[in-house]
Length: 329
Length: 162
Image (cartoon, rainbow over all chains, first blue to last red; front, side, top):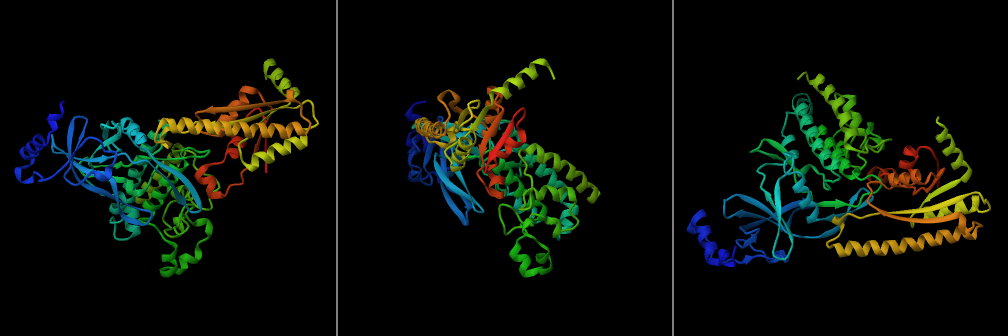
């Protein structure tokens, strides 16, 4: 397609005919090389793979205590040809250290990795979907389908009147969802890929497709002997959150439920975050032993760790049987 | 047990071929010094000093040239380290013919598995590794190579040097 196909006038015409003439921006740039993503402004149009994308706001992410940290390289955009909302991820290489307790993990943000996984999971419904193209400078731009929906953690904390109500009446289906999400990660691992950034805010409920989906897999970490253990610790932390209907925090127990606080030992705490309880049966005695044993794999008292998702899934299936028996559902 | 298996076992026992899996760490150096101290005067022992460099993922680098450069530097560095370890063993009384150094750059999911594959291939009767002395939560996040070898080694003894 010629350069003229995306001249300022033709872009104005396209925006006008699809979205109405009142929405045509007075001023905008047409961008083909996104190397300097700070240059990309609201209402600019990026040409990717011979398609024009109308740039809107940048996305935000809460991380490392910096809530709503802007991600200038991640822009919401509208596909001018069909009007669909997309997320454009521009190229931003980053190397940084993540701390889990006193452990430092070397992490990398890699557009190549995310592009590779987008290809891999194109037919898998538990992952975000999209495709990638090269911009005029050869940058790998990921064009992601927008997922309308909320994070799993925001949803499940609203279930039930209290923990007991939640656990008996809602948790069996939450556990089913969780197992489904672990199976999705197993699919990555079976294909020699890591998710790289497994956190509860990276699971979204897609309210249109009615399914939970993993998002954001552009991180890789430098692994040690066990290639997937960092992913698995992320899965463990999510499970602890789901079973507890939120984080059960040691300082809160100290302030509000001193008897429970007094019953805790160091070995009951989360191996990654020492202010969270992992041995949740001490807090909620109706949790089946089989499920609690899975949680204890992620506690300071753990003697053995899961080496892969298969081992974890074996235990989760046993726990599921007990959870169902308990709830009678 | 078949005749062939018996023969293999007997041959390995006679050769007393040790595989010392090392990197640049202090614990690897301690393991080499331990071998020097224990076997330096033993003319029946043959040692392969093995270092494995896992090929880093392309994801860790913005450009392929950076990855190639990293690998080149790492290879050069490890060759020096291996030469240093060989000198320690030579100084302890080993002869040139009793020692071999081997640097393997390879894709591997687990260094422990890669070491055991080498052991299987070379038919070494003992695998020697240093222990890093990692904390409980470090083992949880990264795993432990010496534990992996201890749990998965077959047809050989394992020496873990503290």
